[in-house]
Image 1 (tube, rainbow, N blue to C red):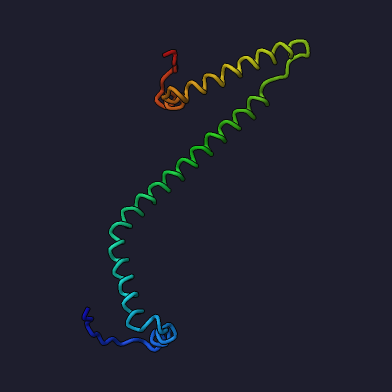
Image 2 (image 1 turned 30 degrees about the vertical axis):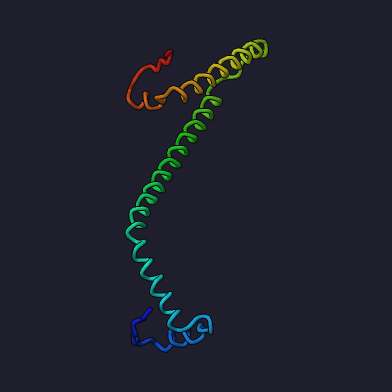
Length: 139
């Protein structure tokens, strides 16, 4: 295969690096040919990478939004629990056992309703934000 001859001008720093990089297995022509091939390959990858990077940026934005929403929901839940425990007076000793049993039953029912809501959708908070009064899911 006949190769074309090309004369280039290099800065002294690049020339020195090129001279240090050459070995019997890696000629100056081979090093420059590999460098140019890599440069041309990078130019063919850019059109593919640009849209991909835009999609990755969009996913990162969505992830940040999701993180903010989860943080907001956790803070709302914590504030509600703090308010509830601060505003609810404790029961007299004789009614506490009955209330604890009733609370345990209600909590189990609550967990079952949350599980069913997650499986069947749409979410209760979406209904609340839409202004719907009830969220009957007896499908």
